Image 1 (cartoon, rainbow, N blue to C red):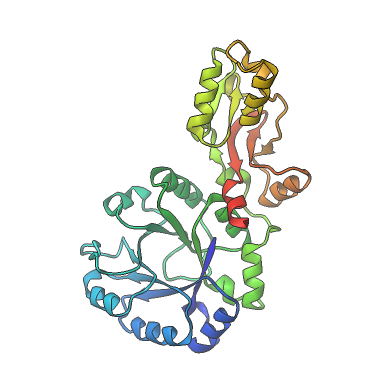
Image 2 (image 1 turned 90 degrees about the horizontal axis):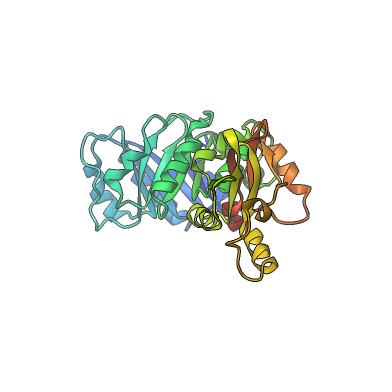
Length: 333
């Protein structure tokens, strides 16, 4: 996951010193907030002279069109317009370079992106735009999942309340970029903050249930009345490499993974059609409790000597969701 440093959040130094520090620490992007202020482009010109870090420009205005010529004259790598403030069209001309994004605040549904599906990414404002030091609203974890499900080829950017713990969760969810402002500049040093935003050991506030994929969105089959073909279809559609086997009232009875299918085929000489689901499934899968914190989750993972790609989430023996580590593994490569 890329870290986009919000350059105006540094209240202690002039802009040139801030950019020099960020450049020395090889930050991924420079986030420039433009609250309907055309003079921001004067800063962009200066930043271009000082470094080659890509610019991530977020514009809040009721009149987007007045920025089009400036964007042509001063191209940036990422440009985002805030939906809620715009009273005119947000359709950007095709000759404006860079990746284009739509920013929405927490109360706005991700369906707002439907009208701008030609854009490259969405920027989810997890706190109040323009106010630094806010707390990340956990409802945005679901918004991220909903958007990714609807637009799997689009990127998700997040701005607001991103600390070390939130950063870990966002990385695990496959978020492309997170914006960091006050957290980055209020730390003992930028290097210290960047380490917190990318480290694997975190202090916990959120629980697994806050960011898991809920059971209703997870691949599942029932033990009774399910065929081996049903299992294969569930694994295929779920696209996670496994399916949970449930009993009455979502009781978790086991899981069936691609590896379990392979073992069953070997054992039964190439066919599983005649095998019962109970004989194929792993009846004692590793699980994580829904109330476990992020730190609990990490400590549990460290106990195992083999890599984990997913964990069913349970509460009182019932399946309530899953957490997967596919995006986190990709991000660490």
